[in-house]
Length: 79
Image 1 (cartoon, rainbow, N blue to C red):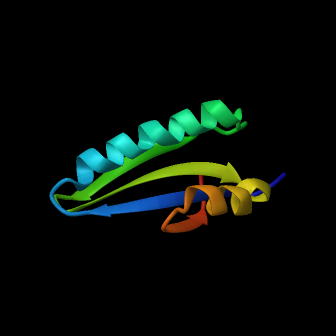
Image 2: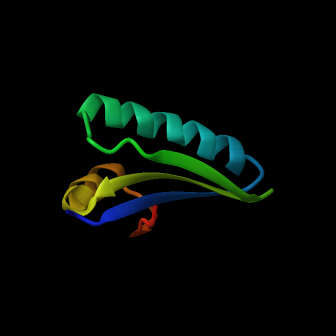
């Protein structure tokens, strides 16, 4: 079984929270359109000036998704 990778998009500034929430909607749309097996997405607000959105994918799909969706960073997903 592949490891799961969390692809992360960082947002900074006073609109970071709203932007991260909105970005997650686009990630969900992409997952539905591409019929990806994993549909784990989310967003987190760290403070007033920093939030992030994320999606989780199988390691075997990571390169393709990285090249198409351009996340800012990634990490191994621990569920």
